[in-house]
Image (cartoon, rainbow, N blue to C red):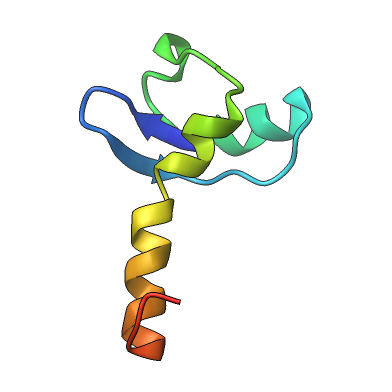
Length: 64
């Protein structure tokens, strides 16, 4: 998951876990040499959660 930490928004989701796969998927992004890679489960899950909950409410009409 690629995020803009300062603006607190999700930029892109890449598939896979190995370095080669990720580098191939990120090759098109300008400025990628300035990217810091951090593996942090809490923050990875925190960013998309509000959007997932919002879509769930739209589909089901309630929070659950």
